[in-house]
Length: 371
Ligand code: OSB
Ligand code: MG
Image (cartoon, rainbow, N blue to C red):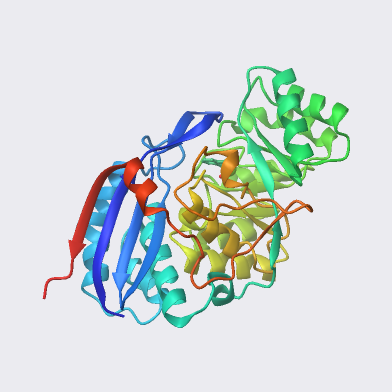
């Protein structure tokens, strides 16, 4: 494939309401949209880094710099025969997985369009619809939280995830269980607890949670293995699994019983699929997490979640759960049975609204192949 040009855009797309986790608040998507022109086709990708390094070490600015200085020149100076080549070419780059994924997605999209194959098909997807859940940030009060959950359940969401932190964990979970005794419920701590909280976290075992996501440090696997031995609730790792190697370590150490796969966290779809297959072999179920992406990243996640071992509902809510208007013309809408339909158009299937994308673009850079 001969690449003609690569375009990077920093965007700001505001959320309908701020999203609050145990450690930070976000008021919108400040990601990078990538666009690759090749062979008469256009591939789109998204690197959903935030302004600050609260989730992982990357930010919009670091991803932009690494793309501009390192990753884009690698793509322009090498022959790419398949999307898997991108993972190999980027392999020597340490970290910077969100930046890598943002460009890798655009190459997958391009190959799908050139070969008339959907991303789901290219990845080996088996599902046409995927069940979806909703991730709810920390709220001002339990009554506000319960009302929100009621609204989401009424609109059809199949699973509720709430963010937790010290002071906002056992009580909201208990209140939810009292009111909604049989819903699929899980919690996400985004690395706020330590081993000293093990006894406190054991209290969550009384509420039949699907899982507790990333209770301990963002880069820990070892202590999670010790904590899992003390909890009945399955631990699910998010932040800690940044590569297939890390997934193998976590599985061998029994640090988790479930894995949240976000392709952006592991450098792209090639690594995500390896982790999926590895987990399947170990009978560890996976599900697809999210990073409050625009419709581009959301379409990529939906394609990935069509693979067989995605056994639990994903954080792939309808676009309108986050954005008044998204940068795609074909936002996901939930079907009556709490699923979304996996796109079967060539590539990831997101149709970018370029006029609206222009409106939300803060900065743009076009890098052309020198001839
Ligand atoms: O930890 O899963 C997380 C959002 C931003 C960063 C990290 C996380 C999240 C979410 C929301 O929980 C996922 C989504 O709905 O896209
Ligand atoms: Mg998480």
